[in-house]
Length: 216
Ligand SMILES: [Zn+2]
Image 1 (cartoon, rainbow, N blue to C red):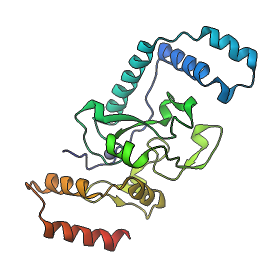
Image 2: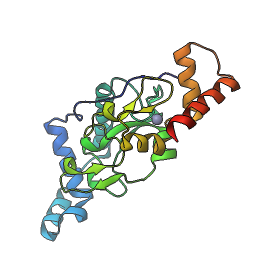
Image 3: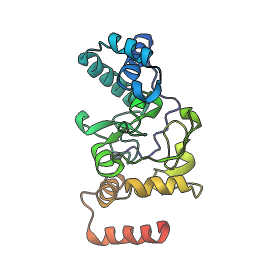
């Protein structure tokens, strides 16, 4: 297991090019028409045009994932910073869940990378929206957002314990919601930082005490 030990702080969202944008527009309008358009005639005409091949969607997902990896500096989970070698266990994570916000399924400002544990065991379908705005950039979130926040303002990834910077409530929420100091991660980070083979019980107790004193 490997970690980045620095915040993943992409300065920009993934860029999409003309052909891809066209496909995304098509997907957004055809699949999720009910969500945004009250105009039935328009919806019907779009439906007729709705001939998107599933292979095109698969290709689009692959492209997005590849560009996210480049943007995030490797195959790392945005939340726990663990390196995920198996691509299938590295998911495209929808910050606003696609189950509720299907029109954001391919909006790159809503996409990051998460390991299967952070995504499936902790994030699930939770909605961390604090204030909604019709413009995504105007929304505020209760967890750290990869593009709308400067991650370093909120979280410290430099040690084996993920810490809070500037007493950030958002940072504390993110640690808490994703259990970024779960035992499995603590052990692996200690092993990597101190070049040791395994973490014994005494050391882990000491780390647990530090956590209790600082973060509770
Ligand atoms: Zn993770």
